[in-house]
Image: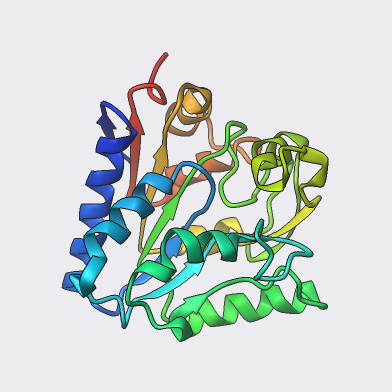
Length: 241
């Protein structure tokens, strides 16, 4: 596990955007795993600005997002699909057919999770998986628990996680869905390369536990210690003691 430290979120986002775009240039058919939430907003800003005017060819890139809220159609303004369209997909030359996304409004959620796993497998697996980390150590919507689901599944969300997402739901955490569809830990760990980004002092304890603590399902991000190629990118606050 490699730790890259940056003065602030802007420097971190710029460095990661450079790396992602370099990978696309070297491998135009890159399969990219993507996160949502507040942390990657700077990354997406950098990616869309640097790709403007078709300066970067995204047409063969394939993407798979980590998660989606259960019960929300893709057009719902609080859905993660709507987030990704606004923050990245509408601004780059990606083929819509190459965007992999969980359907939070699927009637059969279990079958939808199976479909998603099959789609990732059919794409040859994820080459570069970008992750954020929750203050409680969750990645995707893999919440702290006595055991974790290996593959894409329906996850019950902790109150802390719902509170962290309240801004997408009128500031009311009770309006955040109680469940979400999420890649599982094995799905994430099967990626060839993983980059985790963390910004802000509220993430510092989780980052310390992930890097220095025991591997435990009570801190899902700690399982990244077993992966052979992980880079953790942190700003000054997220690495504070």
